[in-house]
Length: 446
Ligand code: FES
Ligand SMILES: [Fe+2]
View 1: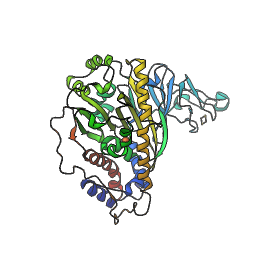
View 2: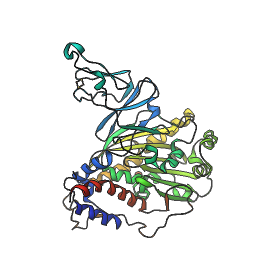
View 3: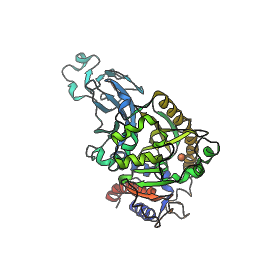
View 4: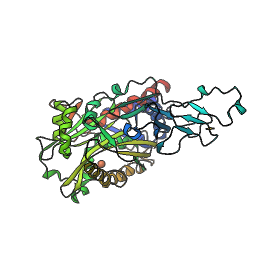
């Protein structure tokens, strides 16, 4: 357990993170990745999909919880269920399609057939080969131990003992209300999620959305220059809040001081009165003045919602994405476009265009980010960068605002809010990460 990671490494990490530094060797170290699999991905809530992707009985999608394949299905009784997508006979991947509608699933290997409630209902040659020996009721699909949802966002957890999803989300529920629960109908997913593989470490990508608006100034400057992102200097005054939440969740908001010309992130006016039906006055005021949201639900779900367009004609979009780790230096990105069910078809199309041209595999801002994340792992694989003794002083800098910036007591939402650029949220996320991975090492490696 923990491979080459010992208590001395944990002590070093504790010391460095407390000092606003993060050792570079951590990024590409395979033992760290193994520890993360064991201590983080085995027990945290991970996003599987949205209920609107499986509206009707028999609808299904196939997903992953890191390396565990998942069959997410709405069974004939209308319940959302999730199973390990692995046949109970000899383990073959049961369903190989991305999505569809079926009442039964037949394994391609020896033909066992399962119902959407998981029951084994068909065995090739049945009684002829097994006689009375096969008790079908013992060979149903294996359910993912915990499946719960919030505003239609379905999460799974591999640990039976995990706290409930709403407990795990904690104060993030207040912000999820703003993002996906702001109208009576809620949001729906349009199309299938895009997915593609990039060279990156999941901690870097998660932190990019959760705690690093600083990168926008440089990485995305060209999108302002060509006129596809708004020019900050031409907008009314805004405040940038980093909100650090418990368990590594985070929210960043760019909020106008006063109600702007295009309130509610520029969303169409026919939705405004619906927001008032679902949100309390504080949430409503914050949404009215908001421009951009980014953030994350630890460990692998991130979101962004921003205006994008051309020559001042901007549309807002809402994008959720999972960083599925494929190793220490690879991530499969799964990216969903979501929009209010009540929005007009015209707005849905315009919002989709804003998403697809900025994020997703063809997005301009996405490509800006991807290039840099790849460079982080490329530059972290060598001898110097992987030196665990830190004799080359190979630590990353998380010193922005260290010991200087106090939380803003006037911020109206829950969590600890810091104003302006700082690394406070990132340091808290690193602390959460360390608490997870250190538990096993401290027990085992004396
Ligand atoms: S592995 Fe599925 S039927 Fe044999
Ligand atoms: Fe970015």
